View 1 (cartoon, one colour):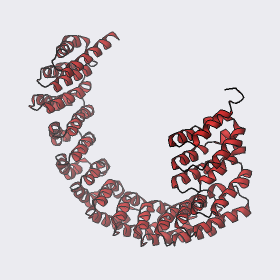
View 2 (cartoon, helix red, strand yellow):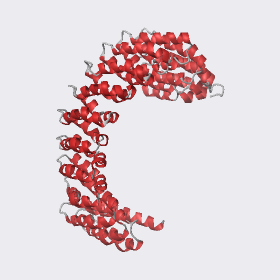
View 3 (cartoon, one colour):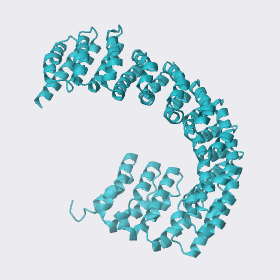
View 4 (cartoon, one colour):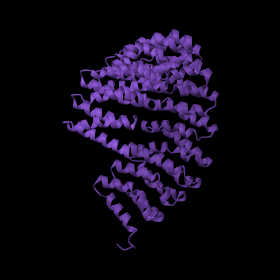
Length: 586
């Protein structure tokens, strides 16, 4: 091909591929737009590529989505910010398509481009685009327009600003609920760009329209605006305008609106300040904690600790604790689970006496809950309570329940307990651990479930690291080595795993004197699985022991295994021998 025709080639290929029936080819072509633009140069990209993309009415959403994404980062390829406006027409078209994710991506790209455009270009090109979309016949254009106002508004002259506020107000009262939903979603962003004088008048009247909407899907989005507007308004305006809305929303007839309030209430408290929180929001929160819909109670229960942190302990004990007691025996397991995941955080807030009197019985009832998730959520946060009430009380009250869980019929519960044992051990101290939990740790090595046995072996290693090799030599190693004679080969394999994990922690001397003889004995086992695991364990112990031990004990054992009738045993034995040779040579 001659050099003159070369620049034409990429656009020709692109056009061919974009019209191809194969969606994958069209997608690939769109994803290579930046490469094609570089080949064409800035001017031809502006004059040929972008117009072509504007006219390209592909009907596949995946292709359109990719195009919306690519155009968002296209400013450098059209000649920088002074030419950024040429990217607006194809994105404007994408803002009107039916598929939501394509529109959202197009709006995101327009916001990215708009935030880099010069102020004069925004007035000449971007604001007219927003007005066209807002006046669009089809609701999709109006939905997209709502997400662009916060970019358009700051650089508009005063006359245009007034017009933009009035257009947004019309969108808040649009006939289509989808448009009103988009207006509610973006109200917070738009309000953040509006001057304080107009915030109290124009924006608050839009907000009031949305809060009284007959569609619950619009009202629940207005709840999110409460927190956003609350941060922008002065505290007294917040109490006057936002607080009544929150209180009425907390009693809304739609559970979805009440759910949103329960989720957002913590942020709303920060917006209105401490005094209105005590007088108005505490009763609203108590209502939500006792709501007749489980979903609302779940959302409210999950925020109970955050809410208590805002209040003083007396208020929390007086108003919130009675609700917490009710929730701990709620008919929905999900409510109890949500409560269990945060309730431990209440201990530092309420203090020692209230925790012992009021919270400990609740912890105990949740620890004995019939659903594993509820119990797990309590176990995982025990350290927060330990800091408040001390170890003696914790061990007397909660430990029997933990021991019970360690033998739970659900293996996942047993697994969670094992994973928390090192944490408990470090909190409870060595003496306490030996008395109460030591026997449990050994018991798990012979569990019916492999994951439990594996976790138990890991647990022993972590305990040896926590309490040191001397303690492990006394309390772990003898009991572990006794179990190597277990009649079932799977349990013997677990012991081998435990030995391989303990060796690096115990150090060279103990490994040579205590652990290595047991491993070598296991190499004479009848079961091939044990023998090839012996080969793996021997390979892992080589870096720990002296070279003389490797030559005297490990290598002869591996040579013997390398002549085993079983193919896997031979494979792993040879692999270990090669690894030894490699280490010795290096």
